[in-house]
Image (cartoon, rainbow, N blue to C red; front, side):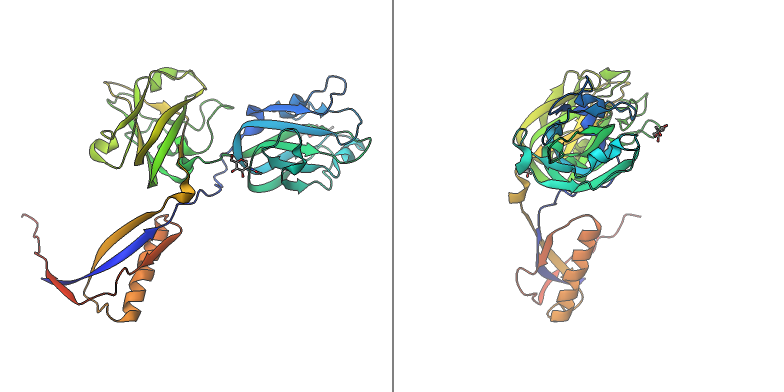
Length: 368
Ligand SMILES: *[C@@H]1O[C@H](CO)[C@@H](O)[C@H](O)[C@H]1NC(C)=O
Ligand SMILES: *[C@@H]1O[C@H](CO)[C@@H](O)[C@H](O)[C@H]1NC(C)=O
């Protein structure tokens, strides 16, 4: 059987970390530390992040009052949700308030503006979209003299910035009920609600594992694992973090980054991996009759903006690829197949003009 072989070069650009709209973001304001410019009558800033929509924070009447939450990590902030006071006239105090997202804690006027609030009706909750603005602090301030900043609840939804796990695909050796592998990368560490957003393997199995396909090769700087905030924190004890490009033994034979002695319930532990190279991140828990539970796995990598992967392919076709229209069509088809598999920013091009290079390929027949 004769086939024509051609050479094709595919440049895989970086897989950009997109703002996710999974709707699983945690209210990171509740995990942060709040403060405000002054406290009126003991109505401190934390009343706006207590998860209750009846208590409220309240500053004194002053010039340019502000409220702030330090999210403790740089987040991609998708939205800020504010519940206003329930009062027929005090609700207007929020009018003109400015929401800023950025990294400056004190002189916050240099942080970019997410939204300016014209008004929010009494006892009403409104959402302001920040489109993935990155920052560690969210400030809300009201410009002017004799202003009072008072609000029932402020929620901040987003994802920790730079976590490439959110763009990956997760699988695991078995699944307990609906505790699927992808709950380990849903952006919800499960710190606010128990028994939600965790991945867990089914009981009664040996050597359970969880695997993340990053869909591109990265230099992994660190992996952060958050344990369940409920019973059985021992279900991660002895697990091994393995990183590499092989799928041998389901990826569990890849080089070892760290062994997890244990993680206390509801805590996030960081494992430095020193730039280990790989597309797969496995968590493998060896032993008989073991369960593996994790609520979130975050993966941080070296400056992804500088990473490019080039893949060179030899291409066989019975079509006449010296015909430029056919050659162009092939590139377009390949591009759309790659796009369909989630490869964004891909440049597909011929590295050299297709040639009538005829080689012999032996036809293999299946054994009957
Ligand atoms: C905050 O810091 C992060 C990284 O440290 C950066 O990507 C982001 O752009 C910064 N945000 C602003 C508003 O400067
Ligand atoms: C404010 O809204 C909450 C829930 O939407 C409701 O339970 C409460 O009674 C309202 N308060 C007033 C004063 O209207």
